[in-house]
Image (cartoon, rainbow, N blue to C red; front, side):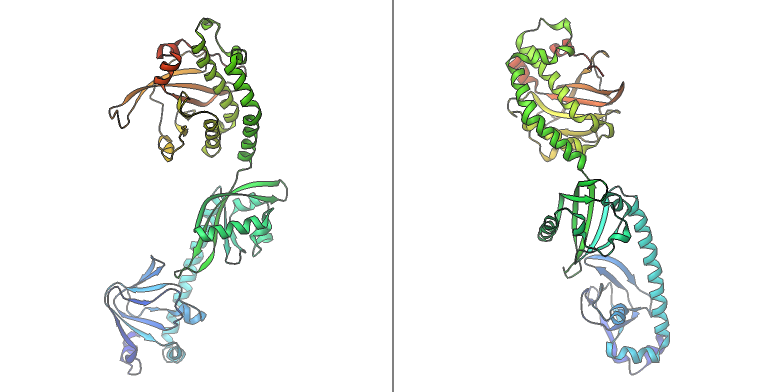
Length: 438
């Protein structure tokens, strides 16, 4: 077929040569010419990403824009010297009549591409249905084009109800969602935004949404891809913590610092150490109080080692204390296998996540099984001590119904403890805190 076409004198005038790296046509162009490859190879790109290639002599490409009467759906780039017949769109009909084999080849190519695309879409749909987060794809008008099973569960609506419907209908405040989309389009993507939705059975829910704008090769807005997850429990935890902070914490802490801390923690402190001096007693009481407070706020979090729920609590905790005066340099949360699933410090910098995923399994947890507290001695490297600096940490067992869920670890500023409270490593070995009653 190719030989017949190239020998046709009416068509040889359409023979075109492209140098390596030269663009045959661009994604979004209005051109609708048909190409037949004579020699060389051509890459097809969406944006800057390669999606396919042709190198077989006689291959036909560029037919999609002709058949649909639309713009180019991808760019074509010569990867070496390319010779191709470029049939103008006004000549394509007569060309296909004269060479019906080309039409048959186009038909087979489109059928193969349709089958391949269907398999890819089916696999992608099955993959998305396995994701725990809700995945939603909307077009440029905000109408829902696709979503996964998690989206049906989160939003409480079936695909039949929402297909081709506006995403705004899901939200309690549609204007807030529209403002959110405007913000997304101005910034390309927003890592996380919490919006309120209307669930038909569960009522109002808070959904954390991460959104990315979809553009074509010419940066024309095409739609929005969103990931959503239910954070209602986290919002409730934040509300609970704010109430504690605004009412319970200031009053209890003030009373504790003025002398009432002994009454607060007396059920948990061993009677064998009642003769310690006032400053050491204050430190011991502070540890017990902070342990009990954080345990009450994080008990449910430890069941699933969920960092998304623990990080807000730890950050709020450090906001309540003076970073210069606190004896804590950081707080570490360990799961039941003693692997770090969250870490926070008074400065709350991006380096906080570096410790997540590391393990305390090889560290000796020194102490009595009758006490929830363990003493840890370890060496951590820093800029001033590349070989490691000796540090002391206190680990408190998080237990519920006789089951160990994990450990709450306080990293200590020993220099400050010694200077301000005269507390040493040996003092921590003598501290005894009783396990709370279940």
